[in-house]
Length: 430
Image 1 (spheres, rainbow, N blue to C red):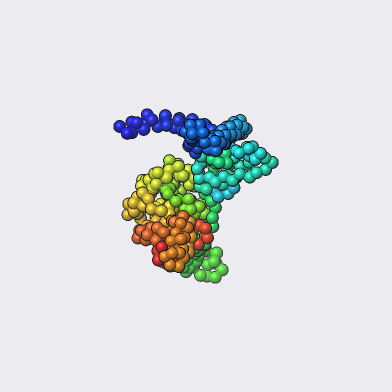
Image 2 (cartoon, one colour):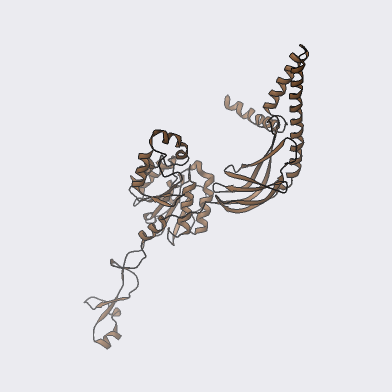
């Protein structure tokens, strides 16, 4: 019953809300005007209170002037932005980087009692800075999260200085806006490179590779491997043998898991991809419908596209055993969000199906240092700690480490690689 009413009344309520936003009066203006009119009729006229009568008339005049000024100012802005706000926006920018568009609108700095503001209603995770220049506001946009957008919606608000009148309207524009994860660099890059080795010959390795080494002939060696020219010079029978080297690793499979607070990990995934930490031959997948990627550019595209599939967090993990051979999953890297979610149970169900535990990578934001000495200091600065995901990081790290594979934690603001000791210190400071 309730759902049926919502389906019926939902569009009607949205239409009424949009219509109300175009009326140049606010709730405060209605209350002020209604109270002033009641006092004028009840006390000013009936009781001949000329002082109150004058005061209520002044209040009514202020409300009327505010409504008139805001209404005319809204009409001025609406006509001025009707064409510019509908232009196509094409941009390719990193999250956290400022984007200067060519959009501007009148600042109304000489308009009496009226102020104009603008924000992006879509995407919502973009901060807007308005720069005044020659009587106009120029738009500066800083996207805070990755994504790909085919349209943007600007919301304009015109109000008076007393808050008695307000007009709000939106303008939609087509866009080809691509926001990549914020670039970052961490000391973990060197750690992973050193751990992966350089692929040089190793005396304890298997005999693989080209036949570039020599040894004395032994019964059973094929005659075609004998170095006859060396025998003619030195009268010694030597044969070619393959170099002893560490067996090369199979191609790696990487998977990016979208979810809440996954933007720092998206930056870490970009760092791994651009620095070649996944190797020259890799397969990259992410939550969503995109096909597997085999190049760096394609892999970053998958990370960007995953922003629209956070509700399906971790679903791509379940398809890894079906999409890849078991030998390929020997070297598996999984990028996970910094906050627990549905993906965690799916990851725990996946690990027993892999030939060996995967390498897990996550990144977090937030303050590393303790909030302050004592309970009072922690209480006063608790909001700064809660802004990131560090309070739940120790428990999350413990569950990930229990899976048996290496866990790399990157602190994005500082680039530090957080080890188990540092993470346990966060638990004690919480």
